[in-house]
Image (cartoon, rainbow, N blue to C red):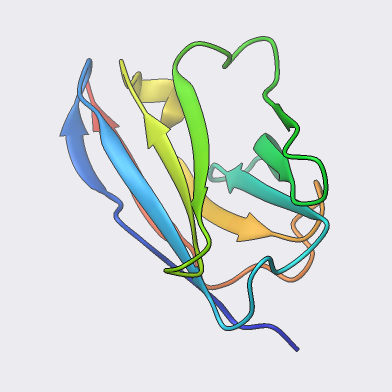
Length: 114
C-alpha cells in the first residue's frame, strides 16, 4: 500500500500563503491524486485533484484561484499552494486517492488566524 506523508502546514495570518507537500512512496500514487481537508466537526472536503494520466487539474468553484496543485515526479511529491488564506481554510489537509479521503496520510494542520 502506498504511503503518503503530508507536511508544510502551520499557523498563518489571514492573507498569508502556505505550500503543502505530500511525499509518496510510489508516484504517481493514484490515477486521481487528491488534496482533501477536514475542519473540526465537518465532513471531508476535496480541494484539488490531478489526473496523473492526462494531467487534468480541477478545484471546487469556491476555491479556484487561491488553490494551486502541482507535482514533482522526480521528488515523488504532490504540492498544494494556498494563497490569500482565510480563517475558514483552517483544517487538517491530506493527500488522498479519492475525494472522500481514502488512503490519506496523517495530514498536516493549517490554522489561519483572523
